[in-house]
Length: 421
Image 1 (cartoon, helix red, strand yellow):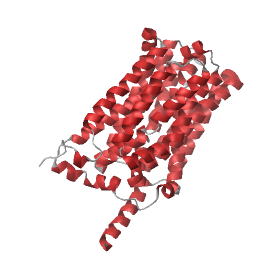
Image 2 (cartoon, helix red, strand yellow):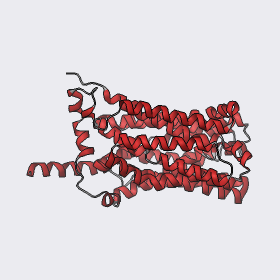
Image 3 (cartoon, one colour):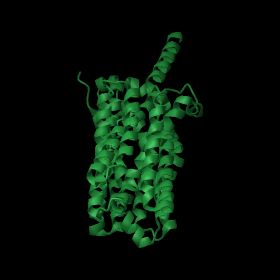
Image 4 (tube, rainbow, N blue to C red):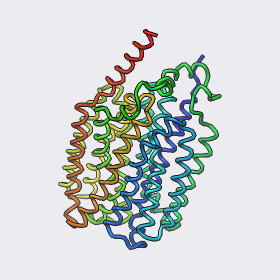
């Protein structure tokens, strides 16, 4: 019997939610200028608004990951998406810096469980050979969704104003929840569209994510492999958050671009990053994942240093796009490492990694705002050189990381236990 293809429906749901989450979080950067004008915010205050999302995202990652591991992806994601969509809509109701920071903080708390639970969902619904490819496709689509957001946001603001634009983005979350609840099941074996052949194909993945853990989640998070995994992702996010926070402002102030041209050029790092994610998924079938990650981060550091030395805006942004391409080669590799290391605690390990990543997302724009407030226009190059150093740290982490060997040791341990029993 030929296996059914219900698992591809799960991939489509995951991609749809991943893109939606990025559209809703990136919209704030495209609306930064009118928000700053209407609410009379300084750059340092806008940095706090950007950072509030990352701080909440970081603080709520592990609780949301544990929530998904213990209660199931279906229940967790439905509540998460409904919550963050509500706060997306409320962003349009902000009246001063305090209200905006509070709303964006709560929005970040709502989004915190998205990718850890999507990673658990894909790990249960896909055989091992398809996991990295699905992660690559998902992250490519999120980058492209994020790339389309600045011009989309600008268009919505021109038609509706920035307040109603956020309400429109929130409605998309409600639509996704309706489709998800109607179709998705936590266990592939309970889905009516899954035939016997597909169930057999997915049995190893079901065992990986549903068996009783042989290690407490906290002791797993305190291992050196997890510590280094989250450090490399912290540094990755420190760089990446520049693209969705300060980049449009940088292009207007440091490069003298118009709002429309800045919005167009802001697309390039996310556009190139999407292709980088796809390339990472393809290359991981041919080359060592460690080698891809190390070389990708090292190339990012070099390209960011080169970016600050290029005077013309368009060539410089192509180089920044290539830097994003190089670092995004690592995205499917990092998230699949959460499955290889985490096993039954996949969502929890993914949450820990994303927590540190979004702590970087909090620190990066806030530090950027402080640097710019104190140094003026000359601070932009200092900020970008700091990003290059962070990429170098990520590269060094992959000299140690080897998630595939960690999974092999766990499987050998399980096989030995099964033989004894």
